[in-house]
Length: 169
Image (cartoon, rainbow, N blue to C red):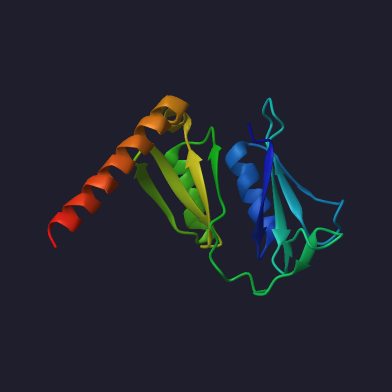
């Protein structure tokens, strides 16, 4: 179970406020760091949070403080970091937020059999936003047995493709 995660942003306050809006929560300055970081807080049973750090530093196990200068301090680069999050808002409301912010927002169907709305924070960090109906689909689709079956099927398909390729040579 995840309680919080962190992402980097060019405008941490703005990003934290949007995430808090998706959660009907609150955005607060993350004062332990006093570096312009903000947190989006959800009013849920886990006290879910997203810490939003300013671009310029990255986390590192080589530093006593946990942070080192980012090799791309502009924060312009894409990242593999993404967060799947629930919202009580409708799809229409999520799309309106994306449009207001000028961020790419689109519906997607995942191979495991559930829908998400991709909301690309600052057009570089993906949030998979799940409305109420999408959340139920996700919970039904993403069980351990379903993941195991999907991975076994993918492995078998790769093996068959490799065998067909080897046989065709």
